[in-house]
Length: 192
Image 1 (cartoon, rainbow, N blue to C red):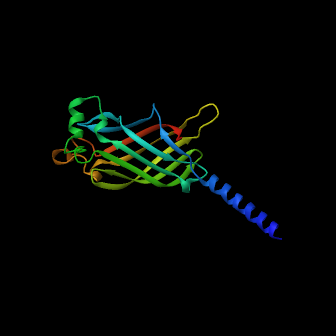
Image 2 (cartoon, rainbow, N blue to C red):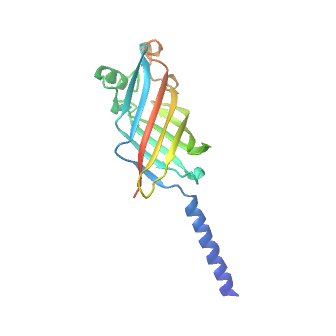
């Protein structure tokens, strides 16, 4: 009888262990080829930029959305719009104020399936000393035997004024539009 009870206990433990393993989301890190870019309007003309320094800690599985998390740290000093004067203004006290606030952080712990391979991440973005809710729509492609990396690609639209990015004369949207579209394409490898 004791042997049977022990066997049942071992069986239950193994099932719980397997269920726990299934519910976990793999941990990924961004690889070369990953991009984080943005589009905005300056004096009526569209311009594009990118952040060349960022670290993405991604834990995601379509089968375990409740165990998934995103945490992306962005080095604001790495902003590059291919125009040095504009980049210096963006790094300065009226915009990112990188001397006081060197990084922005996006984090999310709530995810929803929109359809097929399309998802929604509900998170927060912190820029300067302001934290605001931000939703990202994205697609995800898991690693395969042919391609060992995962692909995560999507976008979000934010209002720069929610983060006090662009103070003084720069508040006026005739100089810089309030709406900024952020795009990302992450090439992800499983963390060792």
